[in-house]
Image (cartoon, rainbow, N blue to C red; front, side, top):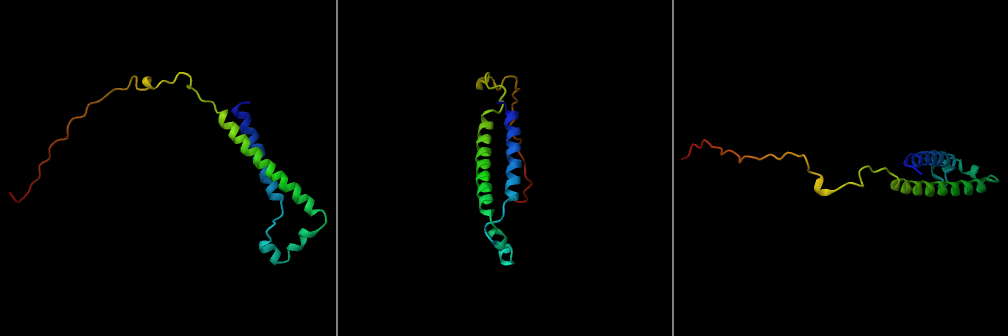
Length: 110
C-alpha cells in the first residue's frame, strides 16, 4: 500500500474513533450522577451497548496505532539510494576569515 492510502485509512479510523467516543455514556458518574442523571444508565440493554462501544473504541485505537506505525515505513524517501556522505559538500565554496582587528581603548590612566 502507498503512503496516501495509509493516510486515508488513518483519517477514516480517526473520525470513527471520535464518533464512537462521543456516543459513549460517561462511566465515572462525575457531576451528572450527583444531579440525578445517574439513573439513566441503569436502563435495560444499556450494558450491552456500553460493552460494544468499549470494544469498538479499543479496536479502533489499536487499528490507528498499527496504521500509524505501518505508515511510517511507507513514507517515500527520495534519494536514499545514492546518498554518499563524501559527496555532500561538492560545489560549496569555502571562505577564509581574517583575524579580528585589534581594538584600541582610550584609557585615561597611562
